[in-house]
Image (cartoon, rainbow, N blue to C red; front, side, top):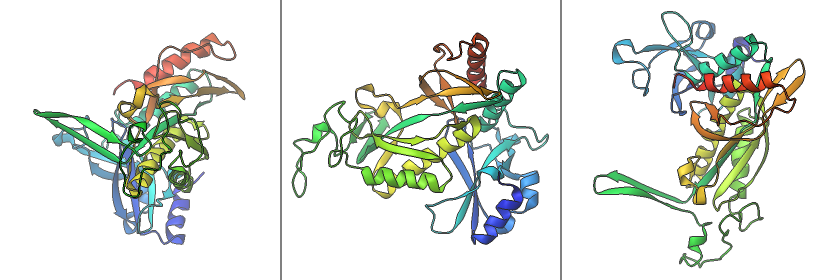
Amino acid sequence: MKTAKDVLKSIKDNDVKYVDLRFTDPRGKWQHVTFDTGIIDDDVFAEGLMFDGSSIAGWKAINESDMCLMPDPVTATIDPFFAETTMVIICDVLEPTTGEPYNRDPRGMAKKAEAMVKSMGVGDTVFFGPEAEFFVFDDVRFQTTPYNTGFKLDSSELPINSDTEYEGGNLGHRIRTKAGYFPVPPQDSVQDMRSEMLGAMAKMGVKVEKHHHEVASAQHELGMKFDAMTLMADQMQIYKYCIHQVAHIYGKTATLHAEAGLRRQRLRHALPSVDLEGRQAGIRRQQIRRPLGNLPVLHRRCHQARQGDQRLHKSLHQLLQASGSGL
């Protein structure tokens, strides 16, 4: 486990120029502020750094805007996308007057949920294995005015482009509706892009496993190894960041929004489990209803826990409900 001392040494050894502090807003979007490394010392990891939280939707009013970012040294990693060597550190958001976790910080909610499981004697560690899927589009257009409301999406993989005229000709190789799981290239047109996405995630510390095309045209999945709840939520933020960045570099747009799905293809599900003295009990695959901060909220309908432990089954419900409260 990395300590503040390890992070400061890494900054020096890697000639890091900037430190990018990141946190998650109530909508699940990563926010960031970048500091010169001359500002980063032992005191930062003990006392945190102040920022204005009034412009974050759903947080503080202007008259109480001061908030504190507390860097978690365990999360420190080098960002592979920036021209200047920049270290990313994920932060908890604290109340500056008390030093207590801010009750609308999604990361703080995840930690609170993990602590609740342990305090109830249900288990020692809560694990999540999310399987997030996304679409990659060549063209995204939208408008929301009184006279023009709607959106238009396009990808060269879509079957609607089977007769589209392209410069150099139309080479075919379209993926039919719901036939994308999972033919080889050239039908799978973004093999190299997914490899770069997975590679970027690995560079940022994510335990990656695989990638492949998904059921719908232009739909894809990157696989990660399960981890403890809060750390897995951190890695999901890295997942989203990397797919957006790499797709943008390729001149494309990646989105995890379900509304972009063709024929209502699912985009998110997760495999939760709780470990107690080496014994794991879990819930079968659940559909994720929607993202809340950096913590997924599952459908309340759960299948029987594998060990038949009704108390664990009930407590998992309580955990998932508590982790989503307050948003």
